[in-house]
Length: 122
Image (cartoon, rainbow, N blue to C red; front, side):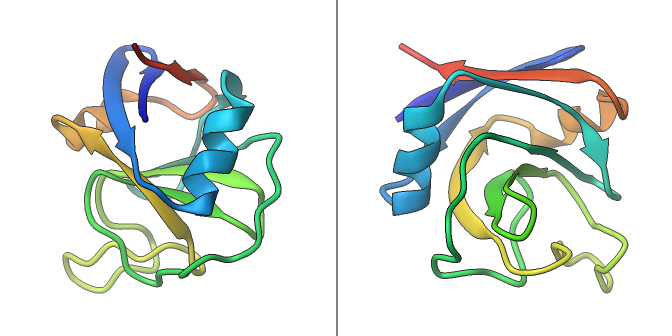
């Protein structure tokens, strides 16, 4: 399952894994939201409610996560305010459901309030 993420000035693709979280998000596409920044993480609420599934306290640059506490789609591209050193630590455990293909640090160019659009890719 491949998706396209558009957030001015960034447009990139990502690949979803086989988790229940990924399938629920896939079924909800397309979705739009407004970027909230938390360190080098973008998150925004989506119309999906999923319980924790193999929640992770640490993630990798380029991971896509779903934050069950906020029904939020998260894009991780670097350290957050809770990180120690170079680790990437979400506010609380997230369900990792996919990865950005390409250079995740491009998301540093996205500003808070930017409209984000996510759709299925061919």
